[in-house]
Structure formats: structure tokens, C-alpha cells
Image (tube, rainbow, N blue to C red; front, top):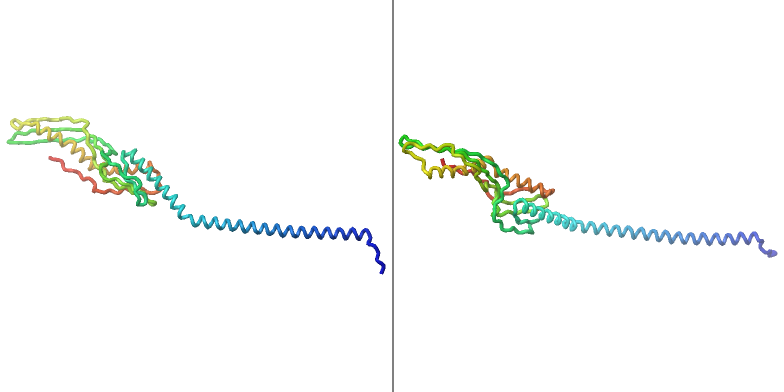
Length: 254
């Protein structure tokens, strides 16, 4: 056979085929590199996300406890400020059985409620047919509150706030006005200074008894709880626990 030189058209087709093959090969190799890089990036991202989620789950209890303790300590400070403002008292504050603030030594009583009472008393004594009579009327201001010299403690818990303190009592009775309505002597049974002083001394005791019978101390306890709840705005319920029996009315001499 005779070797004929390739035609120009055949040379052009052959050159084009070589260039096309080279382009396809480079594209294929580049695609393989891109897919490998993308796959590696996805694997790294998923691994990092898994590590982060594991760390968050592992540290969740500690973070929760830390945040809860911070909230309780903040609540304890609010209660301390509320007691100082309302009662001029710094109680002992305990958070999760750990004392964070010791009680300062109080020296006074706290009056929460005041109410005015009007009382009347009449004294009549007869001896040997002769009678003497004393009739009095008085207006007194009774004050109900707490003896701050007794132990007051605040226990802040995750589910409730427990305040331990003595029952409220009548911490004072002040005389506003007293009228002598009658002073009547018998012919030989005369009114003495001791008679009048004894009757005057019974008036504030009568006012104190009235305040106890109308449950003024119980109202003072409710008022203290209301003021504390208003000041601290806590999610936990606030409960008062009393360390002594409630005060009982005292007898008035007849």
C-alpha cells in the first residue's frame, strides 16, 4: 500500500479529539477533587456538631445548677433588703441549707398594723348601804407586730421560701384620750386615789384584749407576708412558720 500523507481535515479532527480528551480528563479529575473536599468538609462539620452537642449535654446539669444557685442567691439578697426596709431587721438567710447571711442583733419591736379602740369601764362598790361609782371612757391606739429580739430566719429553697419567726403580738398600746364620765361618792364610802388609779390602769389592758379578740396579730402576719411577696416577686410560694403559740387574751380585773 502506498502511504499517503494525512489530509488537512484528518489532522484537524485528530487534534480536536486530543484536546477534547484532555479537557474531559481534567474536568473528571477536578470533579473528583471537589467531591472529596466537599465530603471531607461535611464529615468535619458533622463531627464538630456532634462534639458540641455532647459537650452541651454533659455540662447541662452543672450549668443548670449554677444558674439556679445564682437565682436563689439573688432572691436571698432581695429578701434581706425587704426585711431591712420593712422591719429594720437583717434575718439569718439560708440557701439550700447553706447560711449566706447571719442575723444581726435586733434591739426593738416592729409594728405592722395600728388600730384605734374605744373602751369603757365602770366601777361600783357598796359598803354598809353606801355606794361609790367610777365611770371612764378611753381611746387607745393598739399596735400589732413582731418581737425582733427573737430568732428570725429565711430559708430560700428551689420550691419555696420558708420564713421562721415568732407569732405577731400586741407590741404597744398608746393612750389617745381618757374621759372621766362619773365620780360618785357614797356618804361614808368615798372614792380614793387608789380606786381611780386602778380603774385607769385597766383601760389599756381592755384595749389590748379587744385587739387580741379581733385577731389584730393575725392581720399583722398576713400584712407582713403581703408586703414581702409584693417586694420580692418570686416564683416560689412564700410560707411563714411560727416558733411559738399565738398570743392569748389576758383577763381584766373586775
